[in-house]
Length: 287
Image 1: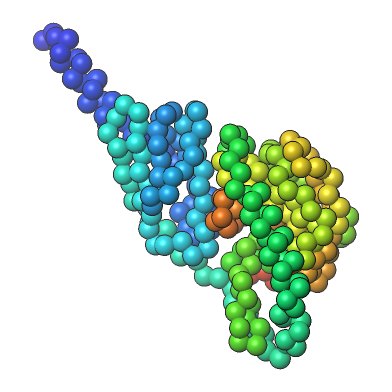
Image 2: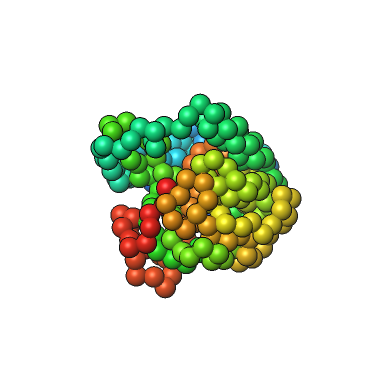
């Protein structure tokens, strides 16, 4: 039996309609994760009604914060097809909680002048993270910026004298002062500050579409704002500046204002026998 043109056209239309518009390339659906994927070029994408930037080739990235809800909805509006709606379950994580009593209050709570300074510096970092760069460096296979002992993990939280402090949003890697810090992926430097109150030497590298790396407590920063950096390029040196108890790198990541877990983009810490998930180690612990 010979198929006539109308039947062929109908078959092709049905096949085209069955092709999924949304593809997830990488990312574990759990709190703190970074999700990367693609949609047809020209599509609009939202995550729980929050618009997500899509590159001209259809690539996108977004992040799930520490306390992300148990599920989220992705909606794709392709340029020449029906909208596609998908719901994903988000795994909850157990975070390490420490309760420390008997700490002098003066060492826990900054004075008003220090608070004002810290807020001003936080606003600078927030502004740097709101930039939208038309880059897709986020699709790179990320590498560790430093090899060392992991002494602090994402999501952990301390209570001093019964009062909760802000959760820790990075991964602390202990290493001698002056150790080289390299770019985990390509990007553009959007903030350089030698001496912030809490974070000391602070550097932000933007990997495109709202995903950025922040490196803090640095001894020395070797790049300037506006510089393009390559993966593996030396960008700074480990220090103990700001509120730190010993030399280490605190590596953090953001998707705009969402604080995400950088370790979800890399494998196990190489060449170390102390990179544990509970943050225990013999080196000085980070702030």
